[in-house]
Length: 546
Image (cartoon, rainbow, N blue to C red; front, side, top):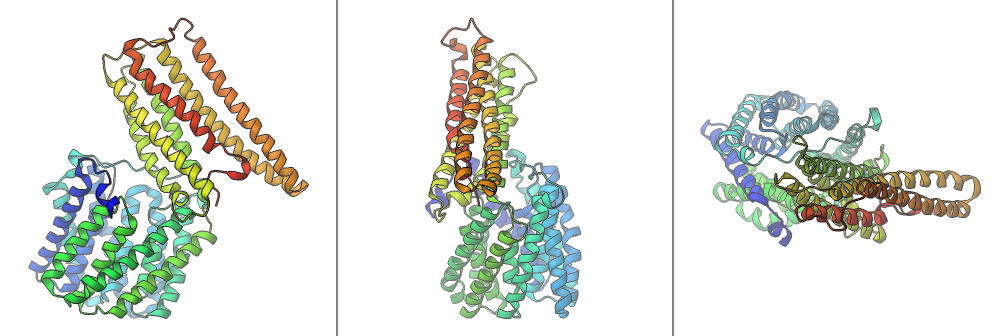
C-alpha cells in the first residue's frame, strides 16, 4: 500500500488521469441512463468508456483521436458476432478463440493495434459477462456509441491532459519475421492458453467459464517473455484473491443498492487507473471488487460466485503459465538482452549528440535520445522483473539484475545532466569534452562486443560439451570468457588512448566552462565500467537464463 502512495507522480499525471477516467465513465453511464437504456446496456457503455480511456496510448493526441474513432470498427462487429452465437456453444467458442488470436496478433502494429485488439476481445467478453442476446444488440450499439463519444469528449475537449503533458513514447516492439516475431508467437501462446482455459473453465461452470479465458488473455497483455508472463500471472492471482476478500466485505453487504454501489464503483475506477502504472496486483484488486459490485447490481452476487471467480482465475493463470513455457517460448534471457542493448545504444547516441552540440553544431540535440533512454529503461525494468521478484530462486542473478537496473538508472541521470548542460548556449567546450565523449562511446561498444562474444562463447561451449564432455567444455568456456574480457577491456583502453591522443595539448583539468559536462561524462565512464561485471558474466552464468 505504501508503494502506491509514495510512488513518483510527476505533474500529478496519475492523479489527473484517474480523476478524468471517473468523470468520463460517469458521464457515459449517466447519458445511457438518461437515454432510457437498460442496466445491461449501461454497464456495457461504462466498460466501453473505461477501455477507451485505459487502452488508447498512442504517442500523439492526433493518433489517439484516430484510434478512439476506430474502436467501433473493431468492437461493434465482434459485439454482433458474440450475441448472435450466444445460443450455439461450439460456434461461440471457436469465434471467441479466433478473436483472441486476431486481438493478440494485432499488437504487431503498435499501440493502435494493441488498443483495437483489446477492445474487440472485451466486446466478446462483456456479452458473456452480461449474457446478452441478439435482441439486446440495438441497445448495446447505442450504449457503446454514447460511451465512446462521452469518453472522447472528456479526454480531448473537457480535460485534455495530453496537450500539456505529452504521453510517454512507446518503444518499438522487438523485430522479427514469421514465428521469430514475438507478437506472432504470443498470439499462438495466448490462443492455446485460452483454449484450454475455456475447456476446463466450462467444466467448473457452464455460466462463468469466461473468467478463465479473460484471465489467460490479460496475463499476456504487456508482456514479452516467459518470465514476464509468469510474474504477471502470479500478480493477477494475488490481486484477484485480495479483491475477492475485499468484495466479501464491501460488495456483499450492499445487496446491489444503486447509490452506494455507484460510489464504490467510481472508487474502483479511480483505483484501476491510479494503481495500474505502479502495481498490477493492486489494479487487479480494484478490478475484482468492481466486478463484484456489478454482479451485485445484476442481482447474482453470492459468496459462492466469488469463490468460483477465484477458481476460474486459477485455471486461466495455470494454462497461461503452461502455454508460455511450452508453446513457442520466448526466453527471458533473449528479451532482456535485446532491451539492455537498446538502452546502451541510446546512451551512445545521446552522448554523440551531446558532443556535437557542445562542439557548436546547431542541429545536434541529445534531448530526444535522453527521453528514449527513459522509455527503454521502463521496458528493461519490465523485462528484468522476473529476476528481481522476491520469489525468484536465482539469488545471484537477482543481485546482478538489480545492479544492472541501478547502474542504468544512474546512466540516465548523468545523461539528463549532460543534456541540460549541452542545451545551455553559454556552455563551454574544449578538446577534453570530445575525448571524454569518445571514451564513453568506446566503452559502450566494448560492452556490446563483449556481450556478443560471451553469448557466442556460451554457444561454442555447449557444442564442445557434446563432443568432449562437460568438464572439458567448462574449462574451455572459462578461458574464452577471460579472453573476451581482456579483448573488450583492451578495446576500450585503446579507444580511450586514441581519444587522449586527439587532444595532446589538453590540460589535466577541464576549463571551468566545461567542468559540468566533463563531470557527467566521467560519471558515465565509471558507470559503464561498473556495468561490465554484471553484464559480461561467465558463459555458464548469463545474467538471465530461463
